Image (tube, rainbow, N blue to C red; front, side, top):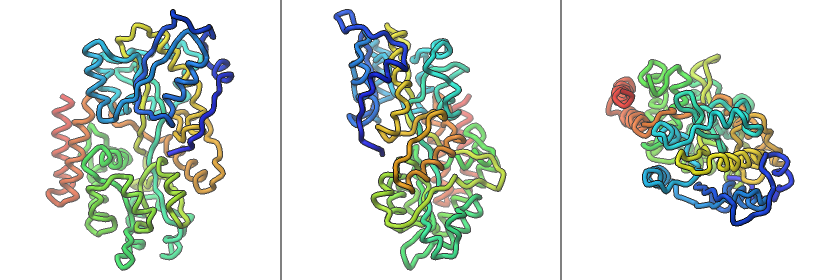
Length: 410
């Protein structure tokens, strides 16, 4: 997603981060950074800008692939070949921190004039924590909310200015909006048997008072029962169990779903593809007044414990943080900080949607944090699939998941 502009802000950078501007020399300290970011994304561009400042620290960049991050980074750490800095998916952060692979940044952050923990949304910040200490800095963030087709709402007698607020509202609206004769489903979302399914389901459980540690609580059972109602009544497509969030949103964009649960990464595609009036609302809650929650995605920065240059590596991270006001403007990514205003884009639908996503971020929670998150997530995914395919009841499926998770937690 995003705006593909690139701006050189060396003067601003010099004023905003405490690194000394000295000519580059053979004595420069070299800091290596690994990230998934491509040439139009933050890391390589921020590194290019930093290197242009000639601070006495030279940063070298390597792009890695998503599927290789955990295995390659852990192998590099165990063999003494880890980079100084890495960007990791937030659910994987605790895996590294709990094994001593990441440097404890608590004291550095406390002394920093640039990194202020109070500026971050609670969810992204929590994902960097382990055992009460801070092992990273949020890089960017995202979340999910409810997209809805206002034209379809009007056509079915629903108020386009009053999107569903509760689960009952959502199911009721989906029933009115579903139109098999027109190949229109009421709702599109992803219940896929991978991290996307957990990403979308966990907020429902959390809003109903459950968590991964008590995933079979009554509220979580009600949440999964609600998903099952939506699938059983064909208010969502049967391939909801196999389709990604991207594919599900494509169904909405094409006019074959009246609502969709997805994230801000879809906004540019929505603007280009959706030929109808649409809006975004906060995720519906179990009942009025219930606790809100939402999923939380994107990556964190961390410094490997094996670095030979911890102070210099932290200065690089301070520079990255000093450029957080560019995350959306230049790269189309949401900063993980509540103190940075998102600039107007000039596209009314997108600007209105972004306000909702920023509000939703106040309630976003990390997956975990726990070093065995993949195993925990797999148990939840299996429960979703078992219940929605009718193999067992929601209660039985979540009871089984709870037993698996209990074994992981020890």
